[in-house]
Amino acid sequence: MHHDLAELAEDHGLRPDLLVVTGDLAERGLPSEFRQATEFLAALAQAAGVLRLHVAIVPGNHDVNRRACRAYFTDCQSREEEPLRPYFPKWRDYAGALRGFYSGVPGVTFSPDEPWVLVVVRGGQHGPCRSPDAVCRAHGGRLPGVQALGRPNADRARLVMKIR
Image (tube, rainbow, N blue to C red; front, side, top):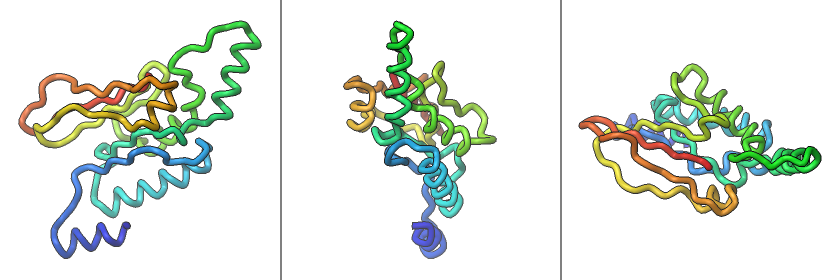
């Protein structure tokens, strides 16, 4: 894939403005899987000449660490406490992968207080977006909202994917 992107750039002057990664970076949500995936994405972005700020990573259901999720719910039960949304421990390793991938890119966060990622897209065009069904299933059947923030100007639109 890296070679194909380089060839398109050299032979035809075609370079993507944005890379969208639509979930399932991992199979089981494990740290080693995320390390391998983010190394691949970093090399892909570099080969494509795309800044990391312009790589939109959308989580999939396999990006949830199910063992961490079960452990969180078991721990809450043992303390007779209600689990707190967005049940963030299941995203711990995914969040770590994003922190590593976007290291040095200002303003990119994925945390319990801000469980969403801001993606800046060039161009004034925008429209309704839907997140993958896999993400919906990973959130107990609730479809995360994707909404536009503010009015897009001539050169950019801001889109936010909120994970509930």
